[in-house]
Image (cartoon, rainbow, N blue to C red; front, top):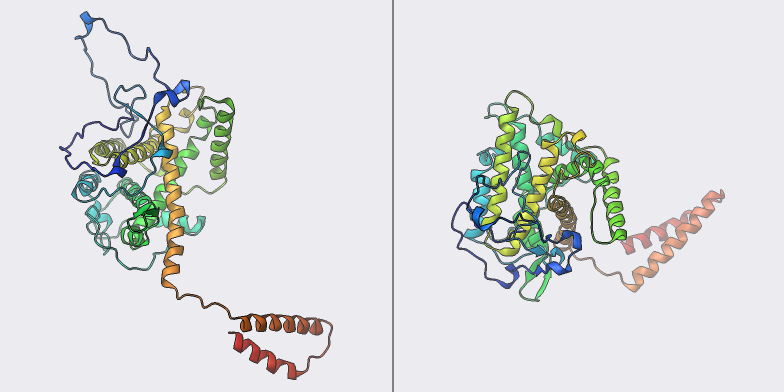
Length: 428
C-alpha cells in the first residue's frame, strides 16, 4: 500500500506527530514468495526510448469505484495489520474535520442536510466532537426481522412535500455514514486511558459520537448488510480463488473459513438487493456520478494527517469500493473464476474482508458498550446476606415438599402458607 501519496485536493500540513500515529512496516522478505514483487515486474526501457511515453497510466478501470494501489508500485510498502491495530491515536481537530467535511459536503450529492432533516443530533456531523454527552442508548436491531424492517424503512419513499432524494443517493449517504460511524466505534473501543496507561473501551466517547445518534447506529447495520451481500455474491468466485498464502494447508484452511462464512450468510434471508438500484432512463449517468463521488472519497484518504488513520481509512474505503464494484459493475455470471480469474486484485479481496471484519467488530463493540452503560447507570446490586441465603434455601425446600404433596393429592394445611409467605417477604 502507498501510504505517502500526495493529497490531491489541498496542502495537508496537519501531520500527527504522536507516536501512536506511526505505522510499523514489514520487510518484503517476511512475505510468501508469491506475494513479493517479481524481479522483472516492470518493462525495461532503453535509454534511447526512455523519453517516449505516448500514454499515461490509467488509474482506474471503468468498473472501479476507488483507486486501488498497484501491488508492484515502487512507492508502496508492506504492512502487517495485526501490528498496527485500529485505535485512538490522538489525531483530531481541524485536520481530521477537514477530511470529513470534504467527504460529506462535496462528495455526498449535497444531500447531507436533507438526510439529517429533523434530527437534532445530526448537526455538525463533520465538525470536531464536543464534550461527551450523557444520553440513553438508542434501539438497534436485535434480529434478522428487525434488521430487514429497518432497511425497508430507510429505503422508503421520502416525505411528501420535500425535495426528492432518490434511492441511490440515499444508499450512498448511508454507507458513507456507516463507514464513518464504524471507524468512530473502533476509536472509542480502543481508547488510551492516560490515567491508567491502558487501552480499553471509553463509554463517554461512544455515547457522544455514536450512542446518542440513532441514525449512525442504523447506518452501521445498513453498511454491514451491503458488504455482506457483496461477499455472498462473490462466493462462487472465491470458491475457486487461489489464495496463495505460501502454505498449502493454510490455503485450504483459508478457503474453508471463507466458504463457511459465505454459506452461513447464504442460509439467511437477503437484507440488501442491489437489483433495485440504477434502474430507469438516467441510470447510467447516475451510476457514473455515484462511482466518481466514491472515487474522490478514496483519494481524500491520502489527505489524512495521521499515518495509522490513513492506513485504516484507505483499507476500509478500498474494501467498500470493492463491495460496490462487485454489486454494481458485474453480473452474477461474470463472477466466474475460470472465465475471469483476475477480475479482482488480491489487494481488493484483502481490503473487502478487512472491512467486513471491522464492521463485525463494530457490532460486537455496540453490545459491549450497551453492557457498560447499564453497569454505570443501574443501581449497584446489594450483596445477599448469609441469613437471606439460608432463608432462600429453606423456602426452596418447603416449596419443593409442597409441590410433591399436591401432586400426590395430599392436602396441605393452611397453617403452612402463612409462614411461607412471611419468609418470602423477608427475602425480597
